[in-house]
Length: 434
Image (cartoon, rainbow, N blue to C red; front, side):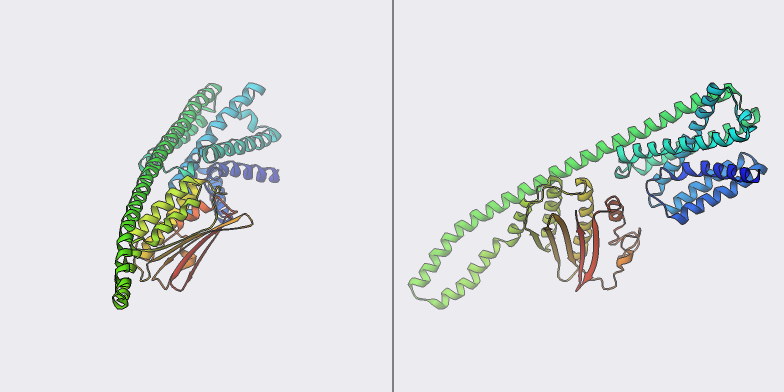
């Protein structure tokens, strides 16, 4: 009997534990899972004395622990609350279905030793299936991690979910007082089902709208990039025309010095005029031409924009691209976001350095594609281990070269190997097997 009670309590704890952690956007550490489970276990033992008020303690405590342990705190809290709400809906639907099939109420089941144990096991399995389906919907179908929902909208959704969870707990207490009559269970199942569907629909609508806004912004950025590229091509064409015109004048002048055998003036003119004119046909034009090897439109647009920005800031840009890049193992949007973060940090650091240098290389060996981005940097005490930590900075609070967001993107691609190094005032970032 004691063994049965122990197993019964453990099952109850798992049923309370699973909704808060199974649909989180990112996995927690094992120690953090154990901490949450232990907290629920303590609250569960207090349930017999304090009743449903303990449920409030469980919800608040678990939400705070999830927020403390997670990177994306608001989204993680929202997922925990959605998990709890879905658990309540499943509980009412499952109880109502059991009554329809067997004619047994919750009070009847509680008096059956084997029946109550079997009831919990089946419920736990159904709970896991439902939560896994929700996780797949939110993060595999909707790609919720890739959608930047505004903090204001996220707060509204959180407030809605928190209010719903509170109503559920109060409803539980009221149902416990009435003994969970069938009519009460049926009405709650209907109301909570409607609310659950409405909440999911609301979240889907916000996600869809946010994605459309992000796509519009991306298309606008692509258009601006195309304009910059077109302007750069026109500028290059004008420089070529000017150089062609000057070339004829230069040849005529050189012929005059040679005809008069005035070699001293010829040497002086060549050094002061010809070399300076040739420098106008800048090497930067040739550097930008190397981007023609990039066949991924989104990536080419990003590299063109960042390269032009670097040149306009007076940086020494060197591109090494010796093959045509058609595909990537990463999603194009993720690759663009990742390299955008890298380039912004690189340009910011290079501008304030003495060498003002940026090097970008794209290499391929046996279908193994690698990207390297290096920038000159004056920071000597760079902590490479802290770069992916949120808030880390070498330039004061809320700033710096922290790569926390980049680490979030890379966490979705375990087959891509990022490397970071610092040598001879060059900060080097490498992505292998992209």
